[in-house]
Length: 372
Image 1: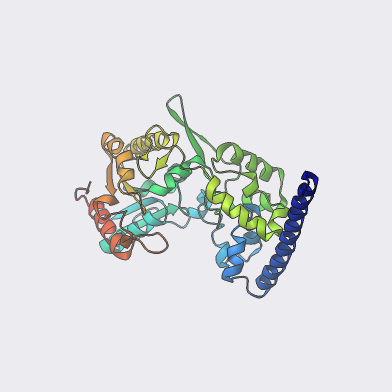
Image 2: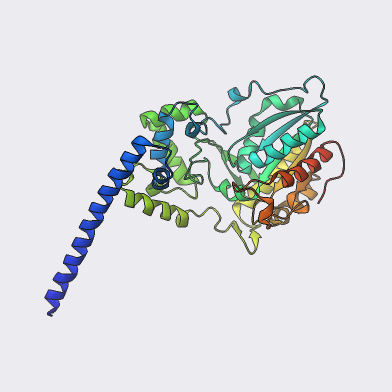
């Protein structure tokens, strides 16, 4: 066979392969679309839709009724004091302490159980889905209604620390984007400086996104500069959202392209003390300690190691907290984060592990020495 003939055969093979891939893609897309019309909650439909762009997923979510399960994440986590008006500002009758909590579901699970065990605590809780520490810090700064709290609980989840390299819950929650935003903090000349997000509450987000307005474009530009995991391939809605093959490829791309942990954490050495995220987090904790002390509030920090993190948070932050004379509870002293039996299928602590955590927190709130 001549070289020219070989090239022709190869080109024909490539052409037929591409043609059949297009046919397969069209047929699969039509089949998934029909199934979605009949049963949108089908596991097969959701499997393919995991690869939709963030904008495509947001479009689906914002079109749903506000009480639909997939739409309930939209209001969650916004740093909007208007959403906090109904939270208690003083201990309720029959209780003697108001506890102000800032964190995510791990912190809320433990604190709610501590409140139940104690029976004489009132909880004022502000948080967000998988909220990183800078979100919780910004919540404390924005929460003027916590002046009646004599105890502040600040929850830090190990897996959320790398997400301090962002300013929204959209990118690192790719499969179920949480649109809430928060400032991106940096150390400038040894001082904390926060860049405020262009969109700061749910209504601003809904209006900007619905119109794809200049505000939305400005927000995306801000994400491109401030979010380590931002990629227009993943974020922007394009014709690829019509292709099932492209959706599968995008899902695989996300799994291997987001770089939040690069230089921040690795399973062998833990958190890098020289990373921007850890340096900023230490500064946040020192500043939070000073602010709560000035207000006459007790600060209790929860170091929540989720599965596989061992004692990583304790090793990264324990000395800083001791140096700032801050009380803290590290879950590694209560149960092993490397034992999967201490975790539920969704990643949260089991009832038994959470009970141990809550008992230690309740004792700490009441003045019993903290486990280290």
